[in-house]
Image (cartoon, rainbow, N blue to C red; front, top):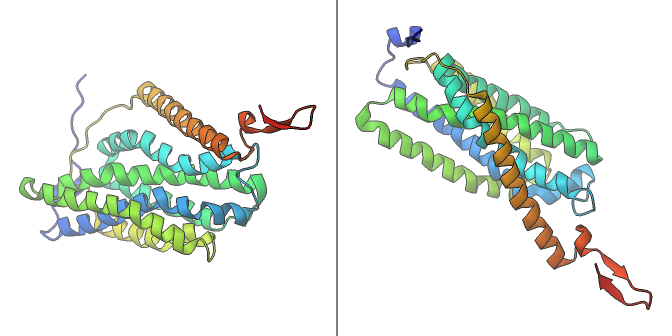
Length: 270
């Protein structure tokens, strides 16, 4: 039985000529805040771990450091394809709006973290994972919304500006993390909340589905194997680089870099 494309109700009443610029502005804001959060914690990591009372260089804590860095990136990379497919199935604007809302909710939960120690680090990792779900929805559907909103002769301009915002967000995240972290590490996550609230309301009120919905099914096994493979590769690269770095700098985290004392009193490295 052949599936038929479904024309959303908004497409029967096309928006005015200014709608494409509203779509460009909102999706650029969404991509900007999503990519800012890819890098915003990197410079602020010492302040974050100091704030929750965890030494990431102690044995057993390096995994907390690595997963706090990797969690958001892994989730966005794994789910961006699935989020795009869900947008094709249920409406790109609908999934984009949901992504903005999810992103904002978990930004709030990150900024109000009250726990300390390992529990606090695990809370941050979990919230970053769920924040990444919203970020994946934003990044996956923004280009599709622009493709629907702009005529073919202007799509290159719209998509190019959107990608410029993505690149700029990666650099802005480093700067914001470095500036806000020393004042209060909660601000590293709180800075996304007002932007997320504004973007969520704006998208809900102004964006409309104008594309064609295509009934389809998610490739669950394909997504699962992609996720497992990506996590395995990133974990291998990250943990391997960490082990080499720690061994070279004698940080006493890797077993291979732990100094021992021989019976004659001389220090050796096992």
